[in-house]
Image (cartoon, rainbow, N blue to C red; front, side, top):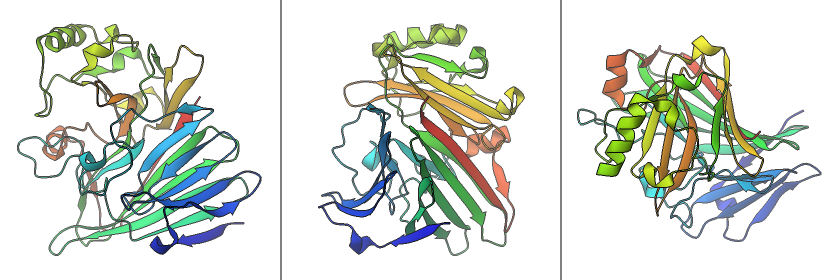
Amino acid sequence: MKTRLPLRREQFHETPSTLLHNDYFHVELFRYPAGVEAVRISNQRGKVIVLPFYGQMVWDATFDGHSLTMGHSFKQPLPGSSIIDTYGCFAFHSGLLANGCPAPDDEHPLHGEMACARMDSAWIVLEQDRVSLEGETEYVKGFGHHYLASPAVRLHANAPRLQIEMNVTNLAGAPMPLQYMCHLNSAWLANGRFKQSIPQDAFKLRTSIPAHVKPTPQWTAYTDRLARDPQALQQLDQPEMCDPEIVFFADNLPQYGNEVQFELHAPEGYALMTRFDSRQFPHATRWLLHNHDQQVAAYVLPSTCRPEGFKAAQRAGTLIELASGEQRHFSVETGIL
């Protein structure tokens, strides 16, 4: 049996209020001082904070006392039209018409229009052993694309993980392009080690340099070495070398099986994990950045293509074309191993 509880913006105040509480879950509603609505969902193992009307970002996630979220400079989520206006969340939806870093010949915003989308509606679904936050936003332009995006965040009872889902339906009469990445901004675990179900040599260093990356001599020498030997970076023991960012790509994931799993093991004995279906996400990105303002070890970013912009995906043949009325479903499980 399912119980659905609609959410309205006027329910959210700076003082948190309990929406539901039982032996397995506690759901609270509150509003940040900057005005952004938030839902805190807790189970026996941890909690997540989701922004129901703001792209349905997962602002923060903590399980078994370990934060999953990148280090950042934001005290709270801030209203904005681009993800860089509020770059402190654990996860956001990158896409859907275009994603990644726009190249000089691209016209789309960084990581696309969905990241900070204003959601039309949101609701909580309570089941016997699961709580979900779901929502919808309809994108429509005159003489342009028209789609329905339906994201969801799900927590099971007594599990140190969450599920992040996205459904996209093309409502237009013409085909629409689709690029999607579940952008997981994972915590930097000092001296953490990478492990995954695909071969280590599947990851190749990004050799192109986006406009926002300003190389230093030290960084250039280090990345030249990584280009020759990508396996040289298997442990987070040189944070100074990850400023500016270092990015790896793994392509054609279905060749390694339908389900793939990626892990980041901390010396303290726990590990972060992410698993997904390679048929939904045939590409993976590893993004590492460590400086005064941001500390992130995105050990895997599941995606439908490389995050190098719309035109790059078009040239590579990895741009999805969604027929009129067609729907695509994406699902990622992430948390503590």
